[in-house]
Image (cartoon, rainbow, N blue to C red; front, top):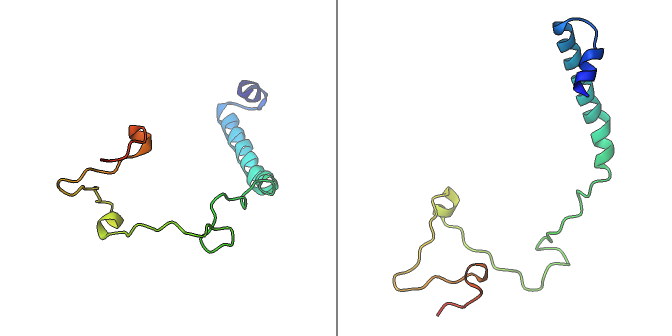
Amino acid sequence: MYAALWRRLPGGRPAKIAQALALLAVVVVICFAWAFPLVAQHLPYQDVTVTPVDSPAAPATPVPSRPTSPAVRSGSYAPTVAPGARPATTPALDGGQPAQ
């Protein structure tokens, strides 16, 4: 397709490059000015699956949030386990076996 377009453009190589860039710019402007706004009307931007906590459809018992320490906020957080304690297990990792 691009080869056929290149052959149809008149002029030498510099003229063809300039015309190809101008055609590309026209396509981009058409997309942003008309095509994308028309398509955006039909996209489900407002159909979210996360329910806000204060909405009537929220669960009766909200899930408690974990406190955020300064180390977590700074990104230097490494989870630790108290000496002698076993870490909690995760069903996806150990087949759902509870910690002993």
